[in-house]
Amino acid sequence: MIRRLIERVFSGRNLASRKPAVIPFDKHGVAANRISSCARRVTAALQEAGFSAFVVGGAVRDLLIDLEPKDFDVATDATPEEVRELFRRSRIIGRRFRLVHVLCGQDVVEVSTYRGMGAGDEGAQLRDEHGRILRDNVFGTQAEDAFRRDFTVNALFYNPTTQEILDYAGGFGDLRKRVIRMIGDPVERYREDPIRMLRAVRLAAKVGGHIDPRTRAPISELAELMHNVPPSRLFEEMLKLLLSGHATECLLQLRNEGLHHGLLPMLDVILEQPLGERFVMLALARTDERVREGKGVSPAFLFAALLWHEVLAAWKALEAEGWNTIPALAEAMDRVIAVQVEKLAIPRRFTTDMKEIWLLQPRLLNRAGRRPYKLLEHPRFRAGFDFLELRGESGEVELEVSQWWRRFQHAGEEERAQMLLPEKGGGRKRRRRRKPSQDSAPAQAGPAA
Image (cartoon, rainbow, N blue to C red):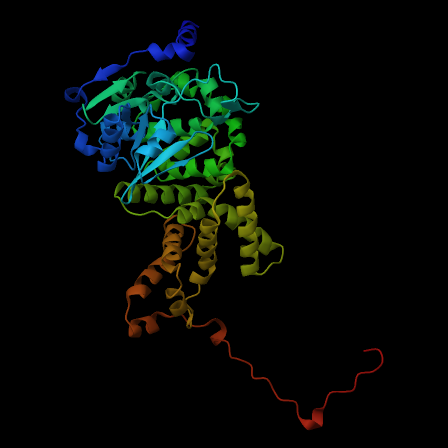
């Protein structure tokens, strides 16, 4: 109660007077040369023009735990129009909150104006019936901007000129302790943006720590709010989670918190199946390994792996109803994807690749005749083969099948010919159509025909 009262006392415009803790370089150790040259140029130009400008958010957090940020964001007291006038190669984007993208060659730095608390401006902030913010174009002070951010570890401001970090919410200390703590009342902040529940799980895994108990407590109770999040935003956050390098930990934590129902509704069913869980965990472990090694990862392959056993179950059920193999598989794929895109806006370019990977699976089991040679030329062969290897290692298919394909890819022509399996039934012979003879002319159709 006392903590909530303090938060209310310091809420709103009172935050404008809050003073940050100043963390000097000799305490944090992040040198300015670790900031991208584009972000340094942007902050320097804004400061020279008389504005306040800092590198903020995830970039500062990652540098403090010795990770290389994927991108650098800048926060300033300049309005989007003032930023746009200052940089020739820039453009204003966004509806919910206007931002400016500044381009330096191939690099892009996202510049945001300090956000305010929205008090006194009824039209600037729009929420739905659950409390989720739909539109938010309220500008404010740096202090207000800090307390509008989600977690303390994301509310750090780095000045490349002085190499100092400004800390309003205790994020520097929390990061040292590897704690993910919500700024403000967790229930209210989750209602503002339910995606924060996913971010809490992802960030805890990323920093190698845990979620603060008070921050974690409401998650299972508010998990239903995930159904109100637009599918496109849900897909974007899910992709970040799966490609974080800690997907295995995140997925297990999502299930523990009950959040997976809003992402992959059938995932809990898949993980209850021994073969399904083994297959999914193996796919996630491989993905984490590739991300940590700096190798590329295909989102389509990963989603194909997550949904494969649901496709497999639907496929077998249709075959039991009398469907032929390939039509049954095609129908199963369409049904599973249709369910998923209602909650998770998986782009068509990914679902197309997913289907090709799935359709290759029955074809890879046929190792006779000219079929293996044709499959090697398939544009998705490598992805299909990697998928087959996962199935073999998880015990779903005979391991010998994927081993055969690995050898066949690199074998010479003579060895390949010897590796081919015999056609079933001695091979199918093409039936020649007989030409009708004059003696066997067709009978004339009667009136009933």
